[in-house]
Every structure is written in structure tokens, then in C-alpha cells.
Length: 408
Image 1: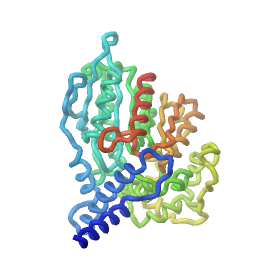
Image 2 (image 1 turned 90 degrees about the vertical axis):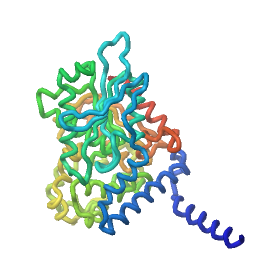
Image 3 (image 1 turned 120 degrees about the horizontal axis):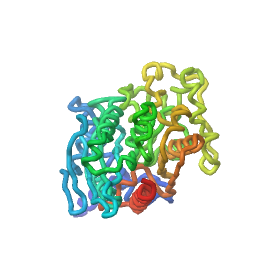
Image 4 (image 1 turned 180 degrees about the horizontal axis):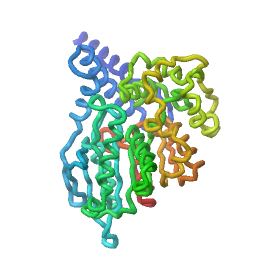
């Protein structure tokens, strides 16, 4: 009996050691976040083990684990009709809210889920619940795009999927089918989905027939650049769940089918050092010393290497492509973008990407709302139901939907 108690105590101690990570005191529901992070880390480690044994690609395994516990079929309710279909060969899930009696035509949001361009799905419960809530509360049609993921495809195919589905939906006969007002269509996405939404908005500015088709864009903790992994938020939150800095760098390399040998060099900005000429012209577009307020910069210093590894950009030129990093787009492109909402979280390596994009858009004359949450962490907006319900998740979702309701 005594030995059993000792063994149990040892196992509990090991579990506590694995789960516990130091977190900022201001973050929402810290112990719940530790448990969520430990679960995700465990899934990552299992998928990496399977990959090391040569049994399957680690991202395919990880996504199988994620979707196995949450994927659900299209289920309608009295207030929201849900259907799975495809738009020009791209799978989508459409959520149709009830139209208001005084408005025969509904507004619409094209939504792009997050997941590092490699994980999650429009059909998992987190995004299904979010889009159902949006459709019901906005009396809107929500089109959630099931774009193809890494490693099935790599950059820029995810962008092509999103553009193809959106162009199809914006055809007059399709808008008419769903009873959507063509003047009240917006795009939105979170994390990597926010990246794709921002890229979509910019790509539309190059086509005259599409230039003014979108009324707004709403970007939730978007990932917007791959040039500087030492902004204040990358330095402050380098080890913060659910997106530590090294994981974000790996997602970028996965997206570009790059070599993991470059991870450590990129973490210290060796890929955009002063001797990498191709990066020189782009640095001013994400100069956080001028784009961020002093309350965000605090005492952090830029990390700029004099000599780096030019081979990284030579092998992965996509790192400097504005289609992948919308933050480095030219001023003329930004000037043509619609009204914008950007949600950022204090405890997130991507915080400064969003704040800098808001500043650049504002300087370009775009109407911008920056919605910052001091106790937020990356991914929090989709965590609104038990057992992964966070108070900041509910507050970010409500604030996001309120802005859409007032502006779409």
C-alpha cells in the first residue's frame, strides 16, 4: 500500500512538472492554459515520435489528433442552416443565419481558420461553433473555407484556394442564391487564417473588377511577417503558450517547405542580417522602433546581425514575399484596402505584427480599429466552451462580433 502511494505521488509530481510552466500573472485562467498547452505539447511530441520512426509526416499525425477529437458534420439548427459544399473546387462550410424581416438581403463574412497553414479545419467544433455564433448574432451568411494544408500543398497554394473560393462566392448569381447584399461582404481570419485574409485583401487590390468588392477585413491575432523574430512581443513571449517563438518559425518553414536546420539562425534574424541585400529595402516597412508605441517597446532592443546567413533567403525567397508577409506590402497597396479591425493579445509573439500593421494602414489612410486584450494569449478567441472555456476567449469573441455588427 505504501509503495503504491509513493508511486502515485511520484506520478503526480511528474505530471505537475510536465504541466507547469511559468506564466505572466495577468494572463487569463493560467492553470487552464497550462493544461491546454501541456495537451498540445503532448500531441506534438507523439506526432514527432511517429515522424522519427518514418511512419507518417508529423503534421499529418498532429492534425489527425486535433481533428479526431473535434471534427463534426454539418448540423443545422432552427436559427442557422449549415451545409458543406465547394466553391470552384474548394471545400467550404456555409452557415446561413436567418435574415432580418426588414432586410431581405443578408451581410456575409468569408472566414479563414488558423492553424499554422498546416493544422485544424473549418469543420472542427471550435470553428464550427464560432461561425454558427457569428451567423446567428449577425443574421449573416458565413463562408468558412476548408483550404488545403501543409504538407499536401505549400505556399502559395493556400492563398490560391482562398482567392478561388472568394471569387466564386462574389459572383452575382452566387450572392443572389444565398441572398447576400453584394455591398456588405467582409473577409476575416485568425492567426494563419488572418495572414491569408490579409493576403487576399491585398491581392484583390491588383484586380480592377475585385478592388472594391470587400467592405471590410477583420484580422484576429494575425501572423504578418517572417523577417524579424525579435520584435518586443517575440522577445517578451518567446516561451508563452500556445505559440512559442520556435514553433512559429517552424510553421513558417513548413509553409515554405524549408529546412529545419535554419530554425536557430532565423530565431536570431540571421536570414535578414545587414549583409542580405534583398532584405534591406524591406526593413523600414517593419521598423518597430518607429511603428510601435513606447508602452509596447519598453526596454527591448532590436536584434540586427551585421553578418548572417544569406543562403536562407536564397533557398527560401518566399520569406521576403509580401503575399506571405502582408506587413511588408507597398504603401500603394495598403491605401486601397477597406476598413480594418485587428485584434491583438498581450501574451502572444504575434502581438506586434498586428500593431505594426494597424499603424501602417492608419498611415495609408485606412480606417483601423485596434482591439487589444491585456490578458489575452494566442488562439484564445476560439476557446469559449467547456472544457477549454477562457474568460478572455468569450470577451474577445464578443468584441469581435460586436465590431462586425456595427461595421458590416
